[in-house]
Structures are given as C-alpha cells and as structure tokens.
Length: 164
Image (cartoon, rainbow, N blue to C red; front, side, top):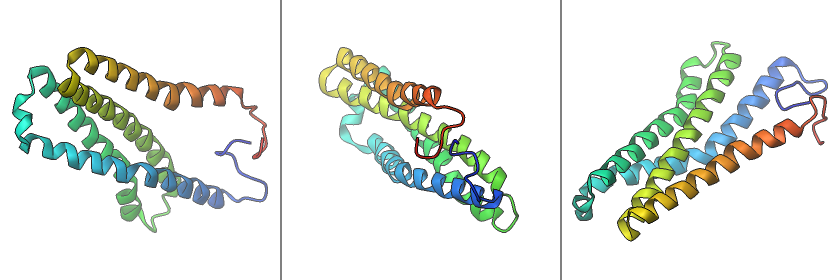
C-alpha cells in the first residue's frame, strides 16, 4: 500500500487528514530556509561588492532571486489556501493543489540554490569555479530529489504494506 492509499480501517476523511498533515510537516522543513534565502538575496544589491558583479553575475543573481521568490510563494501558498478554504470542505482539492505547489516550490528552491552557488563561487574563485559549482549542485539536486526517489518508487510493489 502506498502513502496515498487508505490504510486498513481508515476513512477517506482520515486519509485526507493524514495526507494534509504529512504535507504540512514537509512544508515546515523547507519554508523557513527558503524564506531566509529569499531575504538574504533581497539585501545583496545594497551591499558594496554588488557593484563588482559583471553582467553574467547579475543575470545569475536575478535567476536566484526570481526562483527563490517563486519558491517562497509556492511553499507558503498552501497555508493561505487552507485559511481561505477553511470549513469549505475542500481538503481533497487542497491536498492535490498543495502537493503540486510543493513540488514546484522545491524545484524552484533547487534552481535558486544552484544559482547562489554559481554566484558565490564566481565572486570568490571566478567563472570556471562558478560553472563547476553550479553543475555539481544541480547534479546533486537531480540525483537526490529526482533519480533516487523515482528509483525507490519504481522498486516498490504496488501492493507493498506500510512497513515494507
């Protein structure tokens, strides 16, 4: 049985509650970090060394800021959606949409952190190091956030129990 399937003696409402609380716990893990990252990125143009960035560095910065803001918006959206839909009996729809927003938010977080790696390594060590760091960071995110979960998912039996 997958996490999306009902457990024995679990009603559909209980399953939705479990899915919602699980999603909220995952959001708690990333929301604070992405908000701090976004806040720090928003202060960079006001630092003296920002003027030293070349055209490519400024484009990388804009990518980092835009993806971080989008990540923040997507990862916080389920909370406000829940508030606005409270007592509207829309939990099934909320869980589906919040699931998609969480995936979008985490993807944007990966792009933002990759751009920040390029920005930092570019300022400190130069363009070759920036490209290398961004490539390694992007590869790490793809491996850990896509390849690994999809390989685990592929290996799971569609009828596996909750502890298998």
